[in-house]
Image 1: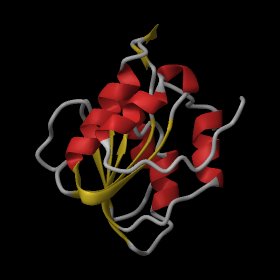
Image 2: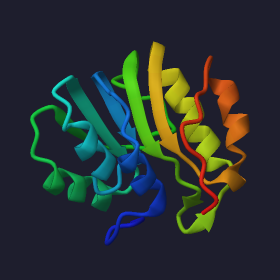
Image 3: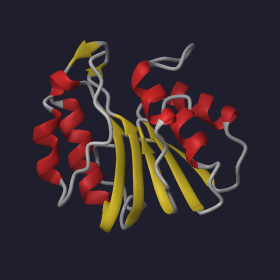
Length: 152
């Protein structure tokens, strides 16, 4: 389970630069629930679906978040899930490892799924390592606003 014992730099970057989120949302690859927990601090968030392929991560997130607006799903965020439609927002620290093996296409698949799950005008708040060619990810969305770029 990725970053179970610490906040990784990508997640920390999102936490340091929060987006004004509201409505129905999802955390793709939720891990232990750090991003979802931060999103749920907003009273404007009506519903938050936490999705992870790792059952242990979903159970940790369930223990870390005691909020009636949160639902927990042991599922692959890359797959179509009926509840993941017409979302107002998606948050994610796009993964680039699958079962311990580096996969540089994985973040792009997460971004594509987010673009499909969002309603017109929805927001995807994400971080990804630069070597994953995040600029090519931008093609999935109508508008991309780069908020911060680090050298680290």
